[in-house]
Image 1 (tube, rainbow, N blue to C red):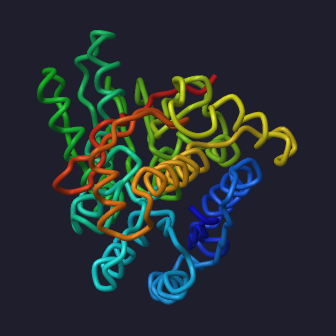
Image 2: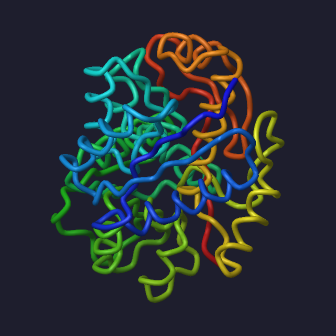
Amino acid sequence: MASQVVGVPLSLTGRFARFGEQARLGLEVWRAAAKGVELVVEDDRSDPDVLERVLRGLAGRCDLLLGPYSTLLMRRAGRVAAELDLLVWNHGGAGDDVQGAHPGHVVSIPAPASAYAEPFVRRLAEDGERDRLWVVPGKGSFGRQVAAGTERAANERGIPVTVAGPGDALPVGGSWNLLCCGSFEEDVAVIGRAVGPRKVCAVAAGVRAFGEVVGDPYGMYGVGQWFPGGGQGAAVGVSEREFVTAYRERAAGVVPDYVAVQAVAAAVVATHCAALAGSTGRAALWGAATALETTTLLGDFRVDPGSGAQVGHRAALTRWS
């Protein structure tokens, strides 16, 4: 095939900029090593309306389209893909509703939001914890989906659980555990007002910036799509070791977060499926993706053939030390 142009809208400014910049750098590192690929990145400014304009523009001049970062923005991207009869490779929207909303038009790379808390709840059960788990989702649907998955996982293991509202009072004293599942800022705010939980887990704690804004994250758990050293061998695309080494060289020694790795995994799978299909047409790419079962630097890849939602990859748990 001729050189492929990969287009991606990313939040280089606005509320998601800390994550959009990581994804951009990760993709630029990937592009430097990839053959026969051009990369076009445009700023969606963390705004759904801007995102739509950018995505429509990229669709007219790119062969493959990656989605934006965040469930909020990916929700709009899915609607645009369906309207224009395109396929978007979703690397930044973990929301269950985003992953299953537009069969034939969205292929998802990350594990869905409802599965995020599984490794933390499993750890509590393995440690013999039976203290009540307080779950505080954010205001958006992503947090509600994580909370619903947490409640199911806790009920299956006999762990009592309370799902609180974003502004509800938390226990003072006693023995309890905490899981926060909102936006980065919402998680940080909840942890700032929590007094005395035995164990704390937060979606926000899955990225390096958490340690920069929380006074002492020692012992807190983070949940995310990937952590350094947790990857397995990549059957397709760049290996974890190669990518992390190259990223650190570009980022003054800083190790990438899962945000960058999942963006690269999307680019790897997209270009691999185009090669398998011998085409960048939507139907051909969809057929290749839904038949594919493989591994990338992010981990397992396998999607539900009916919806395009990710079913192979699993969320990962880490602990600050």
